[in-house]
Image (cartoon, rainbow, N blue to C red; front, side, top):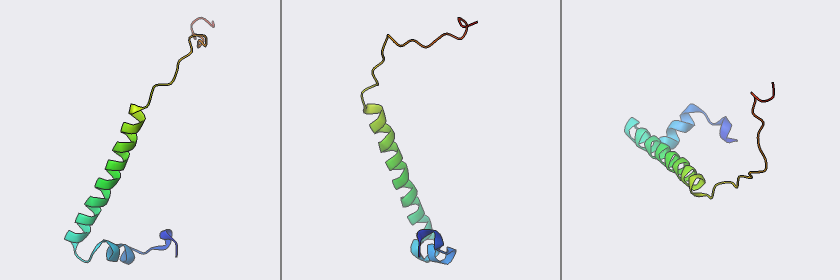
Length: 65
């Protein structure tokens, strides 16, 4: 059975039997996903910027006419 074949009942059983336990597990899951996304953004921001070549100039649209 693939992950796409899970039923709603299977999901509820995995999350917990009560609404409070389901809510707390869902909160933990979304918190973990947000933390991963935040870490990815921070990693990208901390990288060295791309080198810009002054020899390559983009054409100015107003000069083309």
